[in-house]
Image 1 (tube, rainbow, N blue to C red):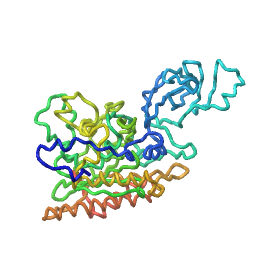
Image 2 (image 1 turned 180 degrees about the vertical axis):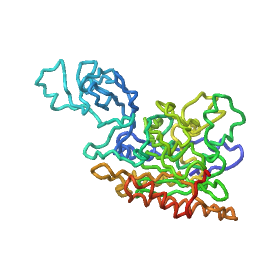
Image 3 (image 1 turned 90 degrees about the vertical axis):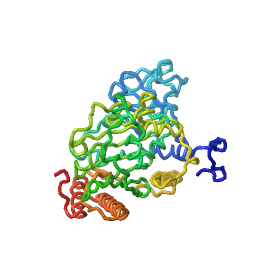
Image 4 (image 1 turned 120 degrees about the vertical axis):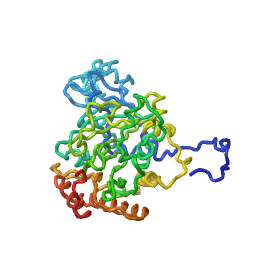
Length: 467
């Protein structure tokens, strides 16, 4: 918090020129750092599949210089970038039927780091036995390349969430967005849900030209009113979610729940649908906030497309890809003057400095989710959080992990007292969350029917609000 000894007077900038240090415990992710070690023990997306061509791809993830490639057998490799022989960069390597060859002296490395060839060395060289190049396990899934960068003996299964498979017509379309700032401030944006009714309501925009219109496409349901917020710890401290309630009419309320799965995965519920267009929906966006280093990050994710989350065909798969997503609203870098006149998330978040200074913040009543997130992450990196048992899956792969993210509308008559109405909406939000939490114990294919049945019990049997 700000130093209370600093004089708080008009024109007092002279007294505020000293900038405190940032928070390395949560913001630094290089090798050996507390947060870096937590992230390395989870599968992280490191590039998009479309970027693996006939030449290697130089990447930087959590402060490590790496190279990614797909060999001519179709296998994906993620190796430390500099050759173990004399340090030449493997970004100039030659992709082989098996592995990658260094351009300098021809050493060939398999995707696990094993040396396969050394053209200038004798066949019985001991180097084959004593040197393994640095490599990370990697695989491709729906257009993203994932790598595990932690201790090999602790490698977990890739967590398979229900929303990756259900509804059964779901298509996972990959995308990325580049941010010129620390990963944490992008991460925290999810739990700062009040900004959706402020930043995204164009309060700073008096007039816009054609270049800016794409950034102003959030529905009125988001921007017409401040949400009634609540937050809850999930997965025994390995995640949290928000419950945002908005009154749609005198009889109907919309509750939107999105989840942050620690350390850096978010599951976001509907972005396009107006509150009257659906009864129940789940996730439209799964996104990992992956540090490049301490002052840059890449948001890799899947945009979910199905008839449930885009009932009116608002989304566009063709608009998703490298550094682009079909809901823009300032998610990507735009011309500077456009960002100034119609700022979105990209401008607001990058504008917090390359690494936000928490000590300069003045916490407000709307910041409960952000500070809860930091507290839980701090306990996690300090080893104070019990092991996560929520990510265990059945061996047959049929039972998937449950996502708490939900979009629901239900009947709740308006309370005559505004404060009483707020309390009623918040209480119902908690009941909706409780229904989602109960679904943990339900078989994957039956969860939606279970949730809908419980919601009918909550509101007495909601009729289709679109009628």
